[in-house]
Image (cartoon, rainbow, N blue to C red):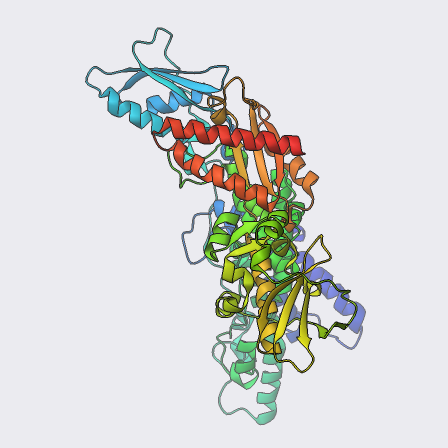
Length: 632
């Protein structure tokens, strides 16, 4: 056994030498007469070739070698770079009866054998054979909790029985991929990492006679000789800082490839060389930024494109569904990173749903993923009910508002918004101004506003109250009171909102109201999923029926994120398991409030033991869904 010797002309170093020498001869001709190794120019070229050879060597490591974080473990962290093993990426998304059987036997030692089957009404029944000394009551409770923590969309638990099972035991030799968990990550990928790449100046390899290495300049030199050495040192330092920047970027690859919101911070690091302070302004160097952050964000975007192709996704298009503008590559990458973190888990568990026994449990996986598409990281969605309760406001549709509360408000005004005078009143537009802390200011000015005085607000105001063109201020000639007016969405009437002592107060109030409305509409993007199988048992024969294998999505029709309804519906159809049929309901504010009045207590009731309350709320929910279908 021996290692075959490579021919000298086949090495990169030799090719660099030959090509550089040919180029020097072509460019310089007879001006540069000595091309032997003792010539300083040839020596500098050889050092540059050596540095390039080192860069080429360190850039040809296997890809996993660049993944370890230099300040952490030397083992590659594939999850940090959003790289999943095939066992995780391609594991089944549905938990089958066989999966339940394997997991139950593996989780509970007292279970000798079990059988799980699904009836035509999507109810899973479990028959358990246990050891003689087991506690059936405790085990039934724990198995119930176990099932609901792994429940699929569109299914529910039927009966748990105890007794002897007369069918062959379930084979245990195959491991369930869903239960493999995070420990399976990276098992198919291995790497060896040398540690952080450290650059050493090429000047250190020069002989002492040049005066540029660690020994520094000899003593007693003439000024002209010292100037020549510094000139050579300054020339070589350009190569040093260029190559050091390359090594710094190599060390930062693990951060650049990490699916994270941060990018590596590159800076100039002074090289440990004698007399370097005579040539370099160290203060300015430390303040300089050698790599533009926009370039790094573009590089991060290219890596996210690669992950998209690996996963068969298009996160650029997905984040555009919300309609929220993305301000530059940094913001776009941040939203794509949040989505890519979730997509592998979503693809594996997209059929998983919320735990019936825990009202505070997370929503179905498909809902969690859609929320990532819907909202940027700094935004959070909540129910319209909780938003109005925060301001102690009641909501009414325009029809009910103007019929039930007309006596609580001054008479409606009629005038052309283009005119500047009506009767004895001058009409002025309200200039838009920026406002901060609109919640605090709004509470301060609430005593002037009829809405807040009577704790009621019309739908038209919540739909268009952020439009500055719908506000006017009316003042009587010589008067000191300023009346704020608002034009309703589908009416030509102008609704008085309140009198104010100063015009600047009116301007501040309008700014607060506009921000309040925008905040309510922005935060009220919460949507809901209803599994029909949970309603089916409560529906009597004479009541409207729901599809047993269906799920209903209830979306806020007013929210700007859902303007492209057909796109959202198609996206859900693509992601939803094939055995389920989606139904879509686009609810207005009044319909959504009525839905939340039923849905939120219903979800809490499912975790309790009051079956009468569960059936009552289920029937109301079915009636709401049926009414919405007929209205469409």
